[in-house]
Length: 278
Length: 311
Image (cartoon, rainbow over all chains, first blue to last red; front, side, top):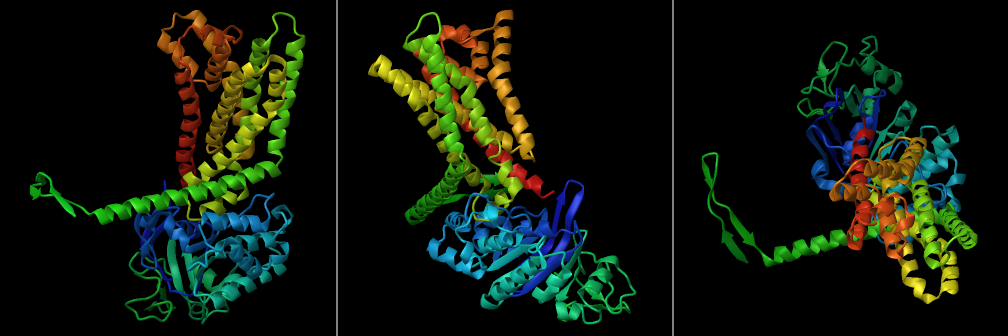
């Protein structure tokens, strides 16, 4: 399902969390959201699940405007928060059962067993969560997000704090889900390697503004990798071989300029309709 | 389909005629939609309450509450039975009622202080908030589940001393004991509601515990003494005295229960108020309000909390 934000601004007092953000996430893509702390990534996620409403602009998931959809928008969205946690005394199966019932899903037992299989927790389904490792906890969080077979899957710092094996296991699950379903996956992460591995498209935010967006292959075409691209875009370091970020205003957000200053759409889209621009 | 046309209205120089169309099918669909939403809300709140009850059992809260009330109840029976002065059912029941004034609010505050801040700290509230359910329903389910555990603990805990009293003084004491039990349960729910409301205000569990203890000190110890002093020092109107009673659920409980037991003279501030003429119905409504109002306030606060969490 397609996600589109159009000229979205959200402020908290004197802090502007999002500043005229226009972003387009194609249906079925696995989209990475990169940015420094305070760039506006989590605010964007909160807008997407209806916890916040924009001061101006619109956020749409498919044909639905999120701000007017109420809690129903979350029927189609699976969200793994960065700080997901569970009552220590419940088992994984009980956690999933209660979330399934609150979602008012049918065939609760079958669904719960299915997602436990998907995230590799079938063998630990009846253990209390207090005995779970960080990695198992994150996989349980992913399972709660996958329960409704979501059209949109939002993963906020999904592997933060996991050991390398936990990260690898988590990545395999997300890749598997991306391949098997039509879900649009939006991954917010500080781990550039994670985004490089999981995502086919990337957006880079800074200070609530979209600095760059496009296909990963294009963004990294003239650099040594996403790390170099990210640094060049965020710092505006013109020494980067191919990509120089310009802080765009609302009218050209998401566009990159080549080293010679020529404006070009970041994903090779036609110049009048680049992804990331309104 | 029926139509009704209202009087033309002028809106900024433009005359607007409003036509209201009443379609039985659309009315039926609206009613059906409302029933569906209510049924969904009931299922969601019920699921969350059942989970909270399960947690209450696994965290031993049910056992702790039953043991606490049973142990203190037996102590009261023992000491009331051996104390000098007039003995009998009224004295013992009044002692049990006074015990409840101290123990029930403390237990309710201790059980409820982390109702919101606990899940918020652990990340469970974030997981629940990602589901298609409002925070108000999450709060309602949490409060309902904890309320059932608390009321069950009060009922089962007072069952043992209550049974001893009935065996000693006969079945004619059952209505008075039932009143005491119901009022104690309502008092517990009132303080649970206060604890839930306080739990939405703070950001850490330790702060919540401190605020809950301060609430206990205020409502159970300080307010009663202050009210007694104010009544003694000033010539207050009946309305002001009534307001002083209703401003504290423990005062409401004292006046209600001790009045019902015919033991108004044993209750400190309550004895001052025995002549205030507060009806049982007013007191019961006031105690119910002390349950409902803090929960409604908590529902508003939890939405505010969701907003500040993003900043």
